[in-house]
Image (cartoon, rainbow, N blue to C red; front, top):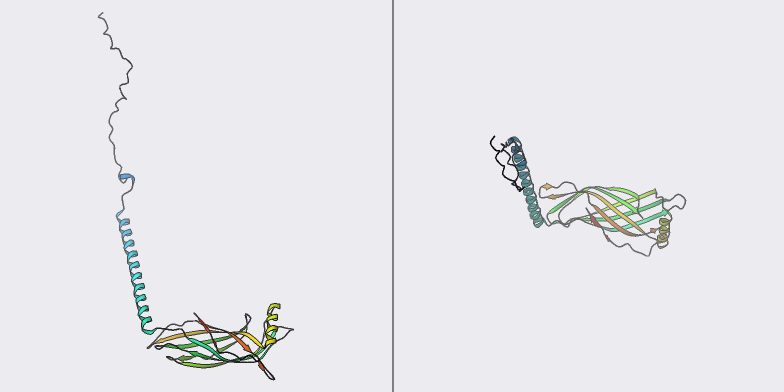
Length: 240
């Protein structure tokens, strides 16, 4: 037998990893780049919604700018001022608080003046509710007949509060009443709740509901007893 050929001696060196056969890779549809492709209907709907939203925003901004310009022009042309209101005189002939049942007996007459300071705006006083208040407690309400007040015009109005009302005062309010009774001068608040409209040429604005608030110091002038304090004409605060 012929001799077996001698195998070459391997020295144990590393000759790299084994070579793997190449495999074909397939790209699944709809998985490109790790994300999905846009559905044409979805893309179209999103685009339409975005356009509508932008259009609405532009319309709203345009309307706001136009209204601001109109308001500015209106202000420069008409120069509107708030209505004015004064209490000219008051007559208090009775103001007695019963010590047994906290009932207030009163007779109060108020003369007041409404004034329109505007040159180009008329004012409709559609409703006037006058409230007489003593230390936070309303003791009487009277309605005043409405009227129209033209440019730079005034209107004198009188209202009478007469009757009785249970107030339910505590010790603090009773103490204040006793102190004022000694001086024959009472701190009475007059609050008017209004419904008014402004007239601009032939047009009329919607109704507004402002208020007049008056802090009055009213002297008592009952029979045989007249306070040394005289009532002072009082300017009232206007609040929207």
